[in-house]
Length: 147
Image (cartoon, rainbow, N blue to C red; front, side, top):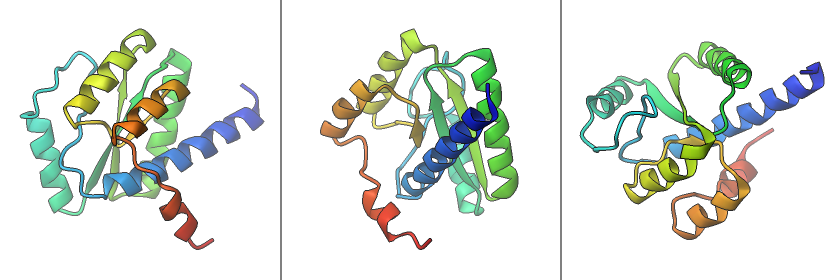
């Protein structure tokens, strides 16, 4: 991957993480983390740990990667690690789900009102999740940021 492509990917991920931070701080009751094999029950001890961490000032965000490859996942994890070093009060947990299982997982999480804070998704999924009220338009937040 060329240096320019790496910088572009890093910039896009940074924007995505910042957008996720805004939604992650928006009072959402619970997020789902862990491995793709875990089921969504709403009663996980991981959710309890997340709530305890937030009470202590630690924010935990979840990032759903839906098109993982060994190289891409490693690069994204490297970017997340760098982000967490620069932002010690924020922990980002990555969930990697194979592309052929991602839509089903994402729509099941949406139905359970347990979507991750940040989602890598196909454009076609965006309209469905937006129309169902599962995705928040972050434009007002971005427009109000000072440069």
